[in-house]
Structures are given as structure tokens and as C-alpha cells.
Image 1 (cartoon, rainbow, N blue to C red):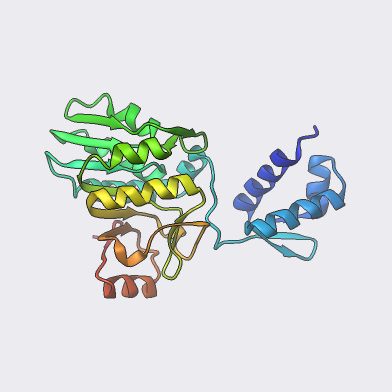
Image 2 (tube, rainbow, N blue to C red):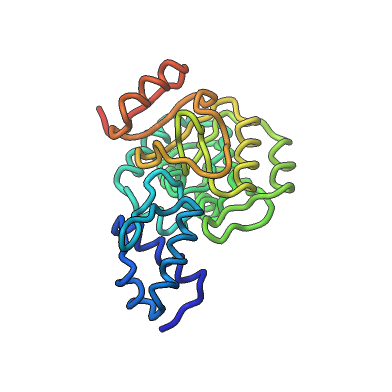
Length: 258
């Protein structure tokens, strides 16, 4: 069945993420379009940084941080993210005022907060707010703004203005790309701007990221890596990253290690 160009290219990105590479002839048959059309698609994805052209097809660019739907992100490295979330929640104390950023790893922190009491949680994620609303010990505050359908998150000037009225003990920051040189990045300019404000109003910045995010970079910078206080990740973190972050004074916590 024919699909429009944008949807076809999104599907090609999904195939790249799933298989690591694609072939022109195979895509031509799958989408019932010419090989010329597919090559144009692959050139477009290469210019965007998503793909690397190869003979007869293309490969996934492993260094690119994709803006993928939240339900897709949630399926990736789910067990590791759960371990990271559990460890992140261990730093929360009764009476804390928190910011929970949107994202698949931050969303997994939510169930671990249920035993806590007298928490105030500000979030820009509709899914996180919905789940927290059923917890007796949590006062939930939701930022207003425009909704990003991919991530169920809110962003914009209204959210930034609202956020600046408060001060928080801890920020749990989701990560799309984490590179020692490029810093912590995300594909969406509006969300990056809101994340920067979150960092300004939180006493402690805690990044939560599984090791697949390291070495990836995207369009919009949130923070230099040395400007966070703690990173909670897994044991696949490259040794040079761990050493460099420790040298910068960042507390590196490996969630899947005793």
C-alpha cells in the first residue's frame, strides 16, 4: 500500500533502528516505489544525520540521538532502565521537591516513589503526572504549554515562566544524547530550552541514562557534562567516560553493579 514520503521515511528509520541497515532493492519492493525514490529517501536521512550511505543501501548512524516516540523508547533496554530508575529513586527523601523530566527512564522512576511521603513533584510529562496523581504522598504539579505528541511532554514560554517561580531539591533529567565534547543534547529546541531552565532551578541535577546514549549527540544542547552533579547509568558505560566524568567532579553511579 503506498504511503506518503514523510511516513515512508519514518518507517525506514524504524527499520534502521531495528536491523542496523537497509537495502535499496528491498525497500523499493516493500514500499512499492522506485529505487530512485528510495535513494532520495536515504540521501535525505543521511543529510539529517540519521543514516550512513553504503553500497546498495544504508546503515544506522549510531552516534545520532533520534527523536523517537516514547512508547518505542520504552521498549529499548527496559530492564536496564528499570535498574537505573530504582537507583535514582533511592536518592529521594520524604519531603523532597523534585522535577521529573519527560522520558522513558524518568517514567520508570515513578513506581519507586509510591512509598515516599510529602513529596512535591513538578513534571512536564503528561504520562508521569497521570500516574503520580494516584499516589497519596505526592503533590503533583504540571507545567503548562504545547504538547509534543512523540513524548507526551509539554514545553514553551509558559512552562518556562511557571518553572522559574520555584526552587527544587533535585532534577531527574532524561537524556537523548550524552557526549563528552557536545554535552547533553536533545533533538527538540523547545524541550532543550525548558530543560535548561529546569537545571537553573534545581539544587542537584541527576542525569539518568542507559549506556546506549553515550557518544550520541543531537541538535540542541542542554548542559555541558561537567555541569551535572550525578549520572546514574549502567555498567556498559565506557571507561574513558567514567574517568572523564569523575575528573570533572560528577558522581557516577552504576545501577546494575552491587
